[in-house]
Image 1 (tube, each protein chain N blue to C red):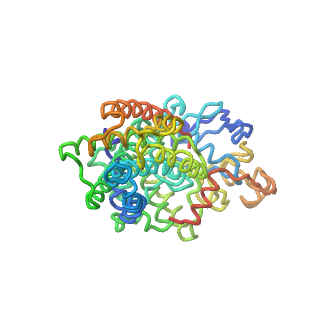
Image 2: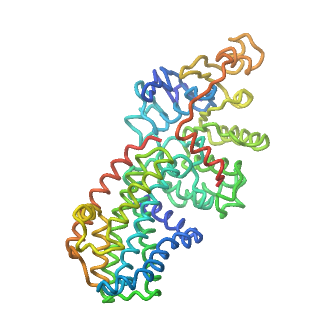
Image 3: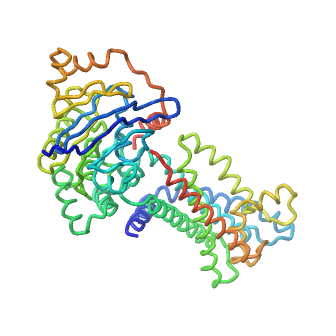
Length: 248
Length: 266
């Protein structure tokens, strides 16, 4: 337990110390929220869908959580050769404890980042339908963070070369974001796209947050929670398995 | 000095696909001695250390540390050694003290002992004044010293040093070896080091194993190796044993990352 705690705390300390990085990482989501949110707002409204900012804020929160969580795992690649990871791998502690500490740390940082975007969205004019639903929405955000931090751990334990990082960004992280319905509604999509959105775990995450914050879920919050939980268990198991097999 | 070897390797083999990095290596390291693995690049030094430190599984053969098999008792073995890898393994976004403290937690050192040991070691390695500074502000030599201090925190029986002086200036190298030798005396820790600098092996090691192409070609004290090859310097003995051919390795993923690391120099 002490081991898990100290590794978790390490991730949090590092996050809080990297102020420049925090500000830099706000750039992407702010661009989506500001430029797309206000730029496409009039079109969205004319289509009879209401406020685009209102619709998109949960999607952008999901995006921030996804990117932060994935990045924490990919940093492992570097860490394994030039960093602290090797120090933990030769310590007399179970690999599982190390994996859990790291993954929880990465997930916590992702949640903090999501919370930051939530605040920014509030400033931009986003209004949740019910204040009471906000804690529940954060529960969904925690699930999203765990799902992707665990996936990142699995990937970070598997790939060996830095080039792999680009592959993961372009062929995994970006599709996960664009297929999640973070920036468009899931209703009436072409069949292929609809099928793809359904196999993307982030779809359920964004849908759940949207359901709780603006009261319109496509699948229903119950379904969203169940899927996220199931995928979370699967990915944590996969992450633990891959991590246990790292040879440095 | 006891007679029981603290490290015993018998017919150790490690292959990566078609490449055999370590090919049927056998040697003993006696408790309390400074033992040097001397060899050209790509000879199998680091692979041997990685097997002994439980990071790589040997393909075949038996490796024992303090009488324990490293593949079947990795946890027990890990408690008994400290290691400084060729590439840094400090967290450069944490302070020196935090790096030490986390290590203490990972090795289950009780809080009070942890504080005392951390302070004693940081003082010994002349890092006490800088304990609350982030490691990324440290020089190469300071980082190496901190890694050694950290590796000793849990009072290991064996300290592995994989090319500890690589990239250090002569002053830092000199200081490093003075530290290592005094540690060997005061902490009674067995030191297993790798190097390709002849003068370093000559100066600090009680016994030297010369390794080349994954095989041990000679073992003995510096004087014995010189006598065996009929040469008057360890360098001449080394060349007599390993030949003069330049070793060109193909670059690995780690080498490519090292290139990037050099550019970014964190």
